Image 1 (tube, rainbow, N blue to C red):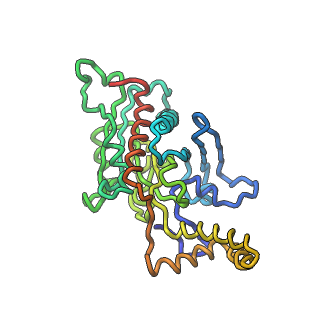
Image 2: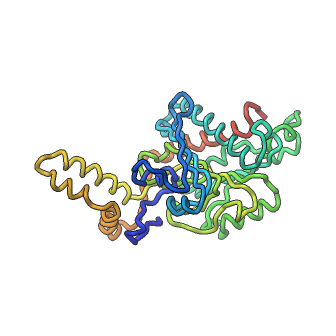
Image 3: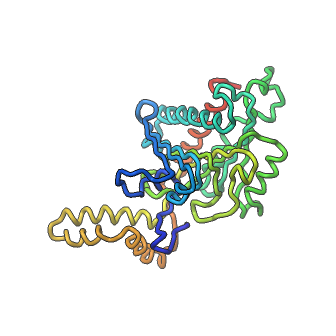
Length: 333
């Protein structure tokens, strides 16, 4: 976990650009170098937020590289409602198709000749980190079909999709970037789609938020493991990242709980002064106090939902169907 120990550089760890934007004071002024757009998706049950970081000013303000960060918030995504998951997959497919088209400079209805490599990051043996491998396991891959599927020629009329789960360094002894550079050199894909589990600041976003970004990804950064980045600059091809938060730092949970506690204390006439004192503390001071109390006992640890096995199953299917809808459309092979 990459928490800053300096109070001047205080931050609560999150991989979501949306949460970075939300924690800025809402004073009605725009953040220099950052644009924000919000709208409702299908049937008004999916909320979309697009954060664009335009320049160095935006990078410094947000602590993230310039690019586009699109967030789909679907409150019921953690449930078993198949119809709702289909809605999310359809919305995801449309957004993916638009971004693939923009990144490759081609028309959305002309993706039939595109060559895409899909990579599922993470450790399949650790459930909260298994989103990438589980999603890749449900994909239809077509690159190996060599022009024919059954009795029909297919690869001239559908995208060439290949997929890989490179595991983690402890399993392979190799950096993910090292593996991918070799695969990309041999298979020459036009685009890399990377799927990974993320860390969130708010527990309510676990399993209910999907982030798409054209900035690439940093494997392991959600829990403070910063190594070789997967970006267009490092790999030589455009990288579209799909991420879902599956863990949240314990200190962040306590931090939000203290906010609720302060509100409750302020509502009680006998405890109002105590509540006002807690509320008046600077956010950095409050968070640092929580860390000082928690970490000697528990260290920097993360929390994941109790139904994480079931949740990863839902999410991996929904994302795989979104990718299918984006690249194959209504075609079946």
